[in-house]
Image (cartoon, rainbow, N blue to C red; front, side, top):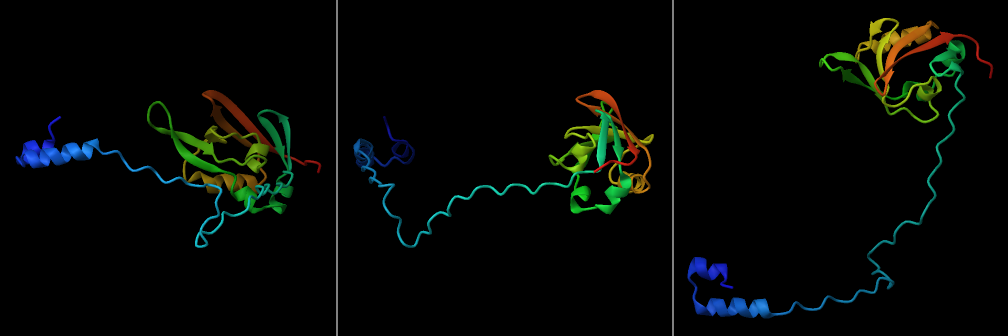
Length: 176
């Protein structure tokens, strides 16, 4: 093998010999490490193992399922128990249909045991219309909260895994 530097720069036989000498050398042995040895005093020990903190239980939501897409919601109890959990139901991102036009919102980040799950929503659901009006970001949120606050019947045209569905949430009294 002819060293490339020798060819490029014409350094001659002395350089060729030095390259051959370097290539023939064996690398020095790696120092043996004792992984069980104590660490130097300037290295902090790793923190002790702690069990993960369990999530706090969420309140029982004032919701009763009639079937998989029809629910009764006790809006009075819901308003009385407004909490951070209700306002952080999940995220909604614009969804575009096959014609590249916005046709609703895709839900994500719904907490297990949260309000969204209690009313039958799942991550990945696409909400197209609510009471006949197209759901858009960000304009639809105040109108949706007005429906909830007013205790009105809500009908949503949705799709789950490309299957069209209609969800209904009706006002009513839900026993504790």
